[in-house]
Image (cartoon, rainbow, N blue to C red; front, side):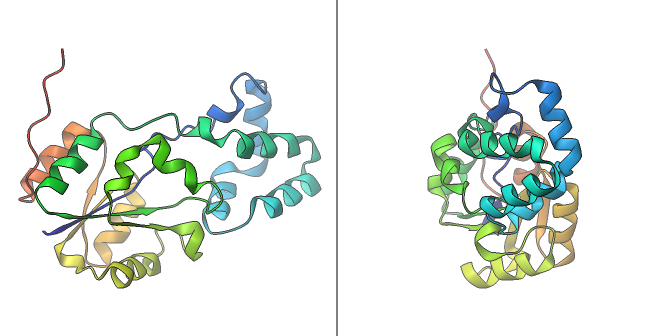
Length: 206
């Protein structure tokens, strides 16, 4: 294994979709917004490349009472990414120091992706990141894994893909990648060492 590809959300950078609404919109109103628009499907459309202007127009037409929620989410998106995932940055640094090629593959809106690296600066150590919203494909579509290999000249059989979504991990395996389900930084260290990659043991907690 000579290459590692990281998902970003909840692997390198925390993502909390409720964050932009805290102190700005009642929790019950947020829950109604998420339910009415089917937020997982709504968010996937954004990750697929739909503009936020288009999203707002669609919500305003179907659920005008939720238009403000869309505005709040976009305007305060920085609060949806409150910082790095504990322990993951050191794994990236360990791999980088050992000469492993490092990339990212993320389902993320093209219009909010600029918040990623400020929230988790270790993303800047990655050689490149393929952003779904910029290419119009989302995981677990096998085409995005093919594009990943083509764009960054990867050999899937020598590449470890890490994601917190079982569906994405399974999709990567089906197209030839070695894939690891992320549950915690400590578990990831063990999984990477089992694959022969040089990452040290986690520092003891004090």
